[in-house]
Length: 512
Image (cartoon, rainbow, N blue to C red):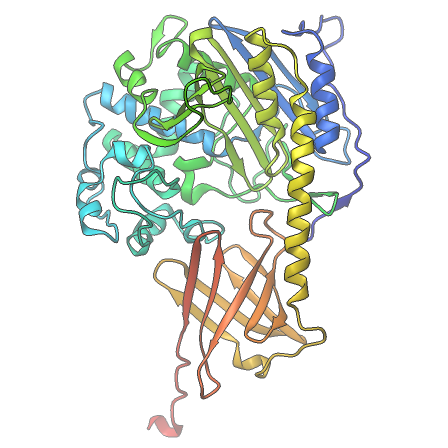
């Protein structure tokens, strides 16, 4: 796929009210102007937000455009990918099954999914729904096992048995998407349904979240759907919506600011909306109760924004300027969400955006928290921009250091067809390297791109599909006899090592 490139002279459009209608009043003076300027500063094409207070939807509004270079405005009904904010929905489904008596928080996952296996036999036998929903399995992230890997949810769950732990079982908090997949599939099985039908029937329908969808299929188009974007060298690029169907319970939901306001109302309303209870107060309270320590802030007398950080069940349970905070953000390839509540204030915010890895949604959420708390108004966006400039300089320095390792006009030690073949791994699936034209091309799942020779033993795999995986260094393992036996690549702490499949021998003439 080729990205369309646009300059950064973006036109931002505030959602217009219907003719004759009065535009909603800002919940805090100057909010719209602040959002619009911050979007221009951070180069975010489109954004929508909702503010809830005391069981009332105080404000919903869209800003900017759904797709850079277009004049289609984003509004409070525009659909955005909410990424890992979906985890709170999966935890809610488990809580509903607990309320119905079909599950318990401390049920073993294997009791609901008999084929479920983990690398560590103790964790395999003992992992509970509570463990899966609080990121304490001990497993490393293993994102390459599912991200753009293709295959079904069943295949992703089958492969997880080959993912080695990074810490002992229940010893440390490590973010893990596949465990939320397991919890979601377990809840669906307990209900005799599918995860997507369950979230539609038990959450979207009763809350009136009529626009929301469990996931977006590859190539699917919907009215008023935001387009994902990312920036590369100060240029905004358009990309395709991410297919999350194989990991759906961990991050696939698409929703609107208007719909997400109802989700915040349910959380702040102790499990009820408009007098209707969707799950027990005890089950909801368990989700908002710390289950695992994530990290800590300063000690007594510290004025740091966050002094403690824990994870509940599908929610981060923290403090914000010494006020209790429930929050969970989300990132997909091309979109960023911030969602959080100050329950003691009965105040909640969700910010949806169509820019990859954008800090702005979280900044705006905190800005609105400060306004609600009556704190002195600070330009949190400007402060973050200053920090981001330092980080960019560091990233540029790293990129220059990598570029310096490239052998100018270098050539691989072996003929190109020596690297060609099919490479396989039990966890990471299959990759194919082929000679096309005058170079090598590698395909794995939904990703494909050329292999650029970098230096002895190393190539760089460049693809134009993903912002999260824009390029990876590929190392080929060459034996003393000159034969290539494996390739390896990594994303963060995860390293995939894939063995080359033997080439079948051609049959001898006459079938001998």
